[in-house]
Image 1 (tube, rainbow, N blue to C red):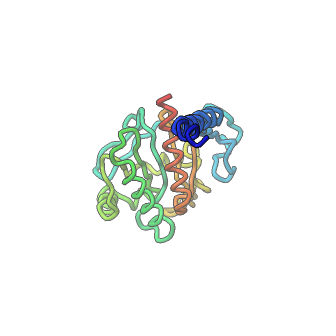
Image 2: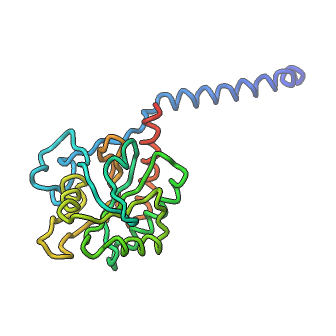
Length: 224
């Protein structure tokens, strides 16, 4: 009897291992693939959405734009064509949430340095104060890599309309003063078709990890 078991021991181990592999493959095949939703204005807190868009349930995309980055270069939607990107709204003199947001965006930058598919875009909500030299100083202080991350300033009305009507990222469209936008901590994940695929608390490290995981899911969706 011992000889019989010894003879077939290796065969049994191989068979058991093969069975485990087959079960694992079947299990994975039966699991639904995770996909990211395409967010519309109707999906957001109405406080973050311009009143003209709160009813919109499909076809929402980021509008065309033309702004100026930390190097004095014009940046438009064409610079982000065919790219996934993460956007936010900040200002260089912000003493509260912006330093945390900028640090977390810098951490994301390090993760995507060698990734040609992904870029970053930060809009100043105080463009009068955040001139090109001010943005450049801030960029150098925070370790911004020009090839991956644009800090942009420009026409205030355009920036505020982008925030309210495109990115759905702020709680007020302002009353005309230099500090009138009540911006949020939101990071917005935008796909290659300029659609919103996720929003995350840019001050929360756990949500930053969620953003990075969702970024991989979104990238994978373009390879399928």
